Image 1 (cartoon, each protein chain N blue to C red):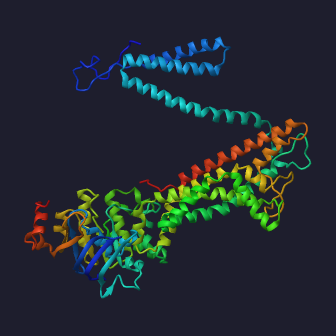
Image 2: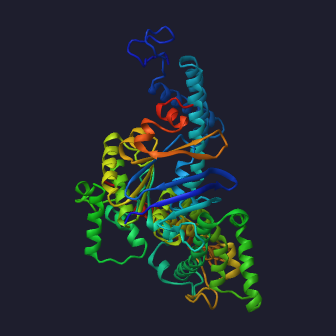
Image 3: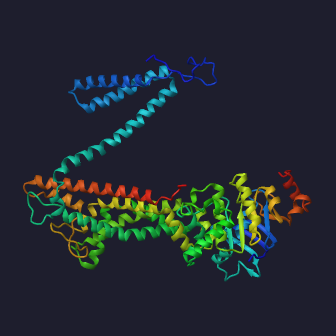
Length: 361
Length: 259
């Protein structure tokens, strides 16, 4: 690795350069690549000692390559540059490690779920199905209905709370609400489910299962998320815009309605969509509140309802006979759920792009 | 149209901190009154107290009287919203509404106050206000474009157009040119001299040449020390302030011997 390139044309490396800026020898790109390649080769040999595996080769290769680059860079480029390279590698590796479970999860779900991603899955319920066939028609509709109800409860409450906190709240009450919202954000989802269960059991007796109960339980989880995200977005609206509006003699409520909210609408939409994505995959609270049913029930105010997560859960734990068909359905339900969440994320991005304040000339 | 403002014994507080003390001033209609003084001496606080804008800041309050044509702005049955409809304001940084087009920005005051005008009337109002702010020729072909796409000076004139579109009696300007280049500043100064035919204008400025160029009367605010309230040291015709001021402090500030 003795090849040297210099930053300044007149520089000769080291401190003796005539220019005002010190020039340094630098490692060429292919030198670094070669070191890593060497590391991987050695790593492959090392892992071959204990029976060859790709994962071990990569791990050995990265560790050895980084070590070699650090040592060589330290000799050639100096300490600061070598540390820079080392830390860059550490940060990049951390990112790579974080990506491993994500990629693995998406791959596994695709691998297992694509098989049953057919029209029957979207067209039929589980009524009368024991083995092959069947679908999640009832579960998909159940998820859509319950999530829509949840949003209908959470969004007005959450949005108005956020407006209160940002525009009106002062002193102790504001602090208390903020604290309670923070606490609510951390409530375990099963606790929210038990809350809804206990609430409805008071009125309808124990053993009651309704779609609306699930929506109430999910609303307990979703409201604080909506409050938090809306509050942050509303805080971002510049105070100058509020003052400009007040100075025109516009009352406060109209300023909020016509200036503050339209300015923040992109962020509000994004926050709400992400909050929906957060609760759409909840399982535990729905198990105790909406129950499970094989047929299609579209009325959240009477009878049990199935949602995608509970569908997946039951297909996995009680797959019927022979079991592989149930397990396939569980994977496909998981895949549909992931697709739904991804679609919601895309919608959130679209909302924030479409409604962002325009700056074109 | 334009109104006279009489201020007597005005104290401005932020919570318990007395920011400005004992201001007595009488602002003539159809004229430009400039307020000068070092930073933090309470010029802006005083200006904002003239249309009750300072109340927007939590804990801010006022003691004393601000009388506009015989009516006390701080009377118990006066709604600050109504005060602000009579007394418009232009801020230091141009702040057009980012979600609105140039057209909508100009009519924002009328629309947001629930005014229902026909399309033709709105069109006329937009043209009149933009002409009043010397902006019509520059933007008449792109009224539907966002206001935030204009240059800084154009944005500030758009804000002035927006302020005069609601036909206020008085126009308050809080350092309207401090974020602008000399050419835009000149455009706005020319505009002020035109606008004083119709409005009473009060302007806060750090630019003493600007005060000398545009104003009829000038008030000099100063603090006696850190933590002390600001006071109106001298209020006189601009000519006199800049040639032969009554107070030594004014002379020191204007000639740059201050501090």
